Length: 413
Image (cartoon, rainbow, N blue to C red; front, side):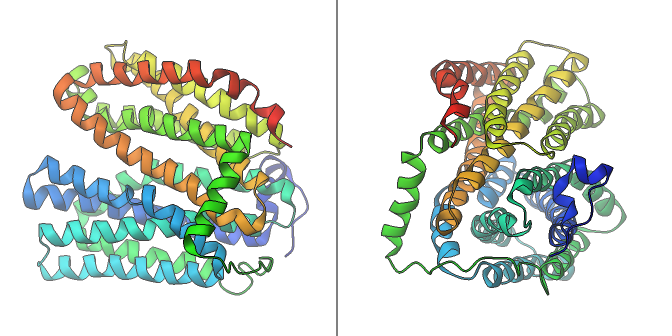
């Protein structure tokens, strides 16, 4: 694989020096946009057909929550078999799921049970897809010093997709139909598959296949993660932050309407502030940083997220909430990306899939579970009391984790 000579942009984001990563990065950008377009369209059609807020929450939950249980097992399969072939197979299955939605929508035969079932299929496939996409990053750059940059840039793709995908979906829905959105997502997988064709992961080292049972292989992955103090601390902090701070984003539609007395425009500014914070954080993390610096970023992300969440529960004006949401988004993104980088840098190749699967399970699974719990609490307590409850839990966890987070960089070899 060839790497271009360092220029201004290459120094700021050194992973872009590598042709293989640039191709993967471009394919990821298109695919993630397509996924967000489908997510919004699916939510729209669920509510249009049923008018049920509960079913809307269940559908969103099923699309993410299976990762909490399935991703660790998926990690064993990823370590056991050829990652490239498995990646192509998973993308093909996801394309089929999107095409099934498009066909049913074109024919006018979409029903609620079909949407729920296809959301569950999406959740199962995401359990493999998220881990595969993260695990492959180590094989996209020849110089391991550029891995942190690759992980941050990859994180920026998901952050940007979350920021840009929903308005693009709204535009498509206004101009066409849900079927077109589903078809757009199906076609987006073609770009990602092409990005890994040819020499896409030619640098993937040969890893001895796992010959032990599934249970034994799972125990090996869990044991390595739990017996490595830095990884254990990072994973615990990741789970807590995503179960509390991330779930506050789910409440923004209620905040915009009930707390700030605003409309969809205010909601857009609130979500845009969180997205801008996350994008800014991932951009800063894309430069060269050693493992000690990455470990410090986990702690910094927690502080930013905690301050943002606590402040959000105390303000009553949208103008004051925006900088706090910027801080919240930046803190969550910093901890998520830094934890991923820490795990990638400390995990040997034979265990990479299993350890990264724990990251995917906790990152997305706890986000989904936390969002569901936040929705239930908000219905009973109201959005402000829910955010303050989460902020209190986060503060208590921070007091417990603070000594470990502050010394995390000393534990990194």
